[in-house]
Image (cartoon, rainbow, N blue to C red; front, top):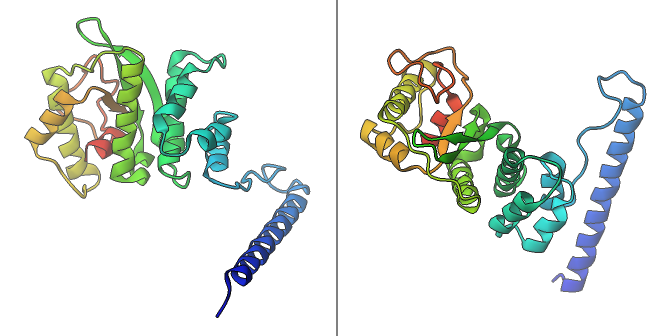
Length: 246
């Protein structure tokens, strides 16, 4: 029977061998890149010791790995607060976008494209009554986060909205019906959805969502009825926001 000491010794030797092999692979890759036969003369993918390093390397901001280790991966709100309160020469909307991407990358353990390409922008927009609300612009790769990651991104957005004193997104009836039309249009003309909410479910969700789930136009398909709405920037179907609602 293998003792604990022997097992620890074997594990240490195994990890050491892995590191030596990784170092060798990177050494060879750097030697190849130094010949300038590739678009980049450097090896872009750098090794990460843990999730904290991986998140900082992928989405940033610089120094966030230390804070992730200090707070722990479960204290997302503390990490979001740190980013929002930092004075790095960024405006408020840039800090919001950074906080969203960093939080989502932690939640998805830095292994999918969702945090890099799934959130394309974040803006503070204006309701018809003059109050300000948060819009999160989702793109197609948000699907790689899975339903939990997508939902958590909206939840983090609501936390940011509350912290910054922004009001709820107040959808007009035309905007609500645009979501209904757009989601059905996506399912019929772009790609069959794994789950298609009922029209009434979509209306309830949009009417009660405090954050505006927006998105870039990703499909050539356009909506035929609820077009040219002032707060929706395109008549084309937005794959990212459809993914979040479905």
